[in-house]
Amino acid sequence: MVRMRNMRSTAYLACLLILALYVAPPAVSAAALTGRQRLVVFPFSSSAGVMQAGMGEKMAAAVVEQLQGSAEYDASFFSKRHPSLQRAVMVERTMSEKDLSDSYGAANRDTALKIAREIRADLILIGDIETYKFDSAKTQSEVLLNAEVIDVRTGKTVKNMAIAGRTPENSKPVIEADAASLAEGDAVAKVAQELGVKPRSLTGEVVRTSTARKKSNRSRVLLTLLLGLGLGLAVSGGDSGGTTTTSGGDPPIPGDPTK
Image: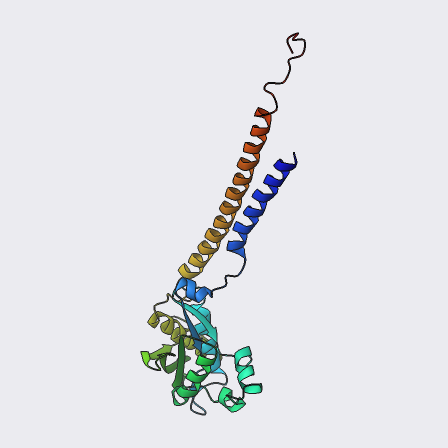
């Protein structure tokens, strides 16, 4: 009995270890395992007065949202509070607070690359909002964005983009803020398309694919758990059967004088 309990415990422990392979964080980064490139998106810069306040930062953050969950990129929005950057400023003194504030746009690409190398990114996306226009008669906006994707290791531009985002003609915004928001969304969707990612604002396919992937992951975990339990029962059953065989054969039949 003691041996049977030990075998069962061993089987259940093996099951838990197999399950942990799926649930616990891997030692190697997810980006390295999946081949997704780590992309840091910096707020888009602009000339003073050509856009509404916060437009560049809002559009860059929206690009990150579009890319999240894609098979191509592990995208994140630039943050001054990243631990590696704070260590570089406060401890190592290899960067300054000014570096973290002056990293936007094509004019500061060297600083952006320095930041990206500090946090070990593969690619950066920087951009400049060239113009912003609003047609009050039609209640329509247009935003022109120049952006580029740069390889952090080589410092070379791997993709240039000239994007024109416009308020859709079939929409009926009442105020400029609504028209501008629609134009921003159009530009962001086009950036995603340029990067090979189907924009969520145009189709629900990306959302459905992400949901399907989550269901698939849950199914894999459940299947692994069931296989582990099956292994445990098989081992326990085999051990129990061996004990019965070596205990002296069939149990006595009541009333049988030969037993």
